[in-house]
Image: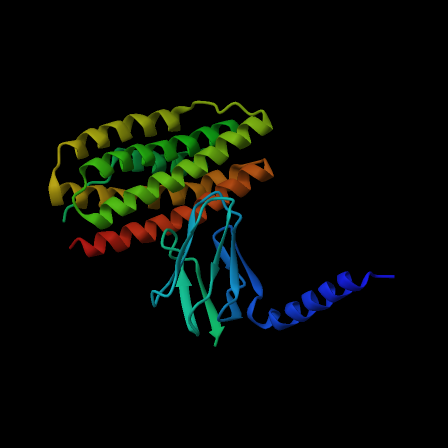
Length: 106
Length: 173
């Protein structure tokens, strides 16, 4: 049997957790062998993107409209939180053949 | 602008031409040595460009060359160590190094916009020649699957460099 106080705390945590998920998804975008995948991804404002660079080369995720510009060191992961809605084409400044699209819903 | 092809490019063309004609395939040890040497040549040229170039796009391109070619060469060193292969010096590597040193000295005498144009023009031609050698000679001759895969990644990234160099060259006219 749960002591009353713990139960209350758990309930509060669950309620809290239920209120948050709509804003807090984490989306992984992988850069490997000079290819971004998925090439087309969807997210919402407030979501976190985990940029995973599996290459030995440094890459960037640079929005053509200037909304974001993230540098990801070789074999590292960088994160960024999406702040603005829109369909954003982005590319790697170092390897411009790496291109992808991120659709960000409000 | 009159572009003189560097002798290093001629050496690579010879490699693709004569070696194929004779049916003499380079061994994995020789391929590793040639690929590594070709990388070192481009890094050395890029380091010269970082100190000499006046155009910011040329400088940025040179910085990209150092970063990418050092990364590929580090992978190559890790791989030969893992495979216990000793890169074997050979006539192609020797010719490449000798001729690259001459080109470096030639470029070293130029200044300003003349230097920028000559460096970028040579980068276009050099990457074209290296990519041709990779495609027609080195990749098909490689026996080890990991070496072949590294060369394929190299080809992909160097094709990007060639496009980048062509783009920078177009901007200098």
